[in-house]
Amino acid sequence: MVKVVLGGALPRAADALVVGLTEGKDGPEAVGLPPSWAKRETRRELSQAVELVGAQTTVGQVKIVPLGSTRIVLAGLGSGRPTAERLRQATGAALRALRGLDRQPVRQVALSLGWDRPEDIKAIAEGALLGLYRYAGQPGAGAQTPAGPAIEKITLLAEGSPVNQRSLDLAQAVAEAVCATRDWVNRPPNQLYPAALAKIAQQVADQRHLGCQTLEPAALAEQGYGGLMAVGGGSQRGPRLVQLTWRPRGAKSHVALIGKGITFDSGGINLKPRESMATMRCDMAGAAACLATIAAVADLDLKVKVTAWLPLAENLPSGTAYRPSDVIQIYGGATVENYNTDAEGRLVLADALRRAAQDKPDLMVDIATLTGACMVALGHSTIGLMASDDVVADQVLDAAEAAGELMWHLPITEEAEQALRSPVADLKSGGPREGGALVAAAFLRRFTESIPWAHLDIAGPAFNEGEASGHTPAGGTGAGVRSLIALLTSLAAA
Image 1 (cartoon, rainbow, N blue to C red):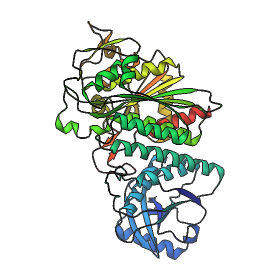
Image 2: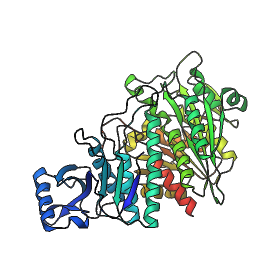
Image 3: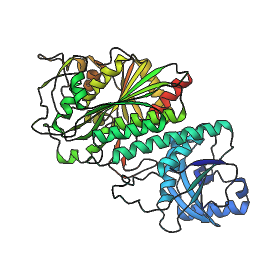
Image 4: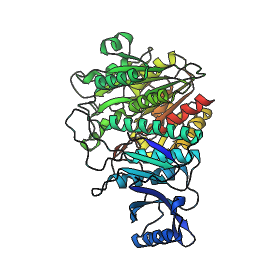
């Protein structure tokens, strides 16, 4: 990934300068121009160019105009002081536009959007790096590097103070984590199956001196991980449970991250319709988010202990697949009446949650592409949050707000709890589709051992089936990673 550096002046070698476009008294007005461009003639020429190309201040709108030997990229910021997320979206759209130029490719870019507080610097740098993302395929698998210019250097015009540099370092780590998550989610399921993802986790751990242990099918069966064994039973590629640990000196709290890792979800015997199955390589986005997050925590040397649990399985129909109405024994002994083989994520999460709770962390957070019901409720851009209590919910919502991700707190109702009653087991794995996201959360809460806990349902935001916009690409998005890193950063600083 290209690095962003701080610079006090516009580099002579810059091919393009990204500036903000806001509503002024007389119409759209460019902000962030370097002092060397403050001449009246230069500003007049730029104003004429803005009018000529019909540049708009709408966030995400981008126009490129030549001014001397430099291309000026006008990135819409809306009116008034832009939020961090508006800066992130605007810069992402600008860098995507530059990346897409086929003629006269851009090699060096300068960023000067008119706002330079530390939080602005972080947002602008994140937007630039996330906007440049493009999935190139798995190395060595015959994939070709996508066409387009290779931007080699990005200079953010701001004071090189220690606090600004720390903001930039955090932005770099966050962007790298989000883009790694996107890469893993986008990888085809015949290349990324449970054993393959477990191998990647081991490589990530080796690079950062993390603890890493992987349980394979024989050990999972022997130790009683019934959820993983049931869900993975229909595939010739058996399930895995990966545990990664970051143990820094001076850590005052311990957080367990649990990520759903269904590397492909056919629905099992309750087979999905074909149109719903095409993107189901994304059903491991929660596990990918946890893996990328613990890597970022290590890169940033955050003083918080983190254990990441990745329950990995492939959900396929076969003669050995589990069935609706099967009774499954989850790790720790609880029995579950399975109501639908396409509600598999909660079963593998139940195993991992119960195991994670044994270590008595201070907080548990699971993240999963769990329910279509959450998409019905909140759409494709908002993460659903359910939690053990309002204190935990507020803590996670604050992190999401700081990270610029949309998140909404949903309740776990008594009605949702009632749906879990079973005449043949300790509980049932689900119920009616109405309120299905709440029922799934109520089910997961049963395995948390009353430890403070939050559940993030990223079924909508994890995968973008539409066109790229702002800093969000088509395909895997890396949803939840920014919020998780923000949460852990705040706990490390407490």
